[in-house]
Length: 109
Image: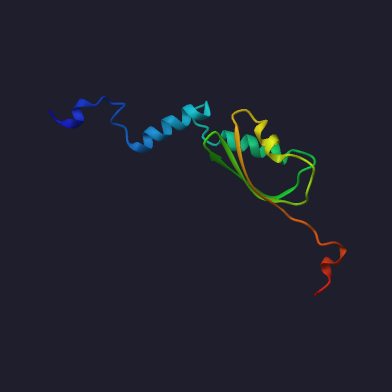
């Protein structure tokens, strides 16, 4: 008997096809593999006290990784804000904060 004939049609899917199926289950809705990242990004960008020059959200197991540049320091826990989005339990914070050096920025040194 041919070895492949022993597998059902679902088991014969390519590894990529299997991964896509598990991604759909992990995100809750088929066809929306980046929905969690987009929800976190929308939530952070819409906050009135946060101003990002760049913000990238990447999926990690059980949560997201935040990457980018926050334009000024604020007394907010950005990780808690990200965790407030449903489905985010872990947050890896790789954000950097741009600090201004005062009003002498335009002067040459």
